[in-house]
Length: 77
Figure: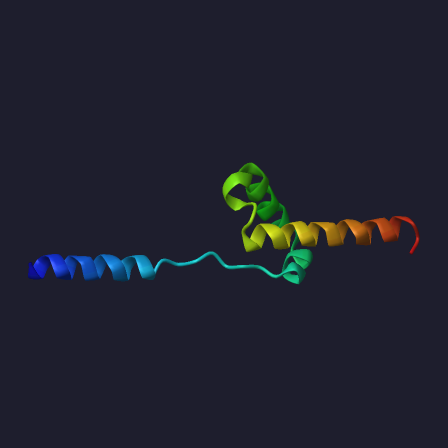
């Protein structure tokens, strides 16, 4: 019985210590277009699981922001 309780405690502690993915801010993604392209590619390849994650939402917002900036530049504004 003692080994069972010890095993359960170790199992619970190991699942709690799982490293989470870093969440990038929109400004960070605007500044690093390589990272932005990587995250958007991952999100579009697996939209069922990743669409509602913070990184995917921030990447889409950063992509929209960059598109608007490019349009303004091309229109001379």
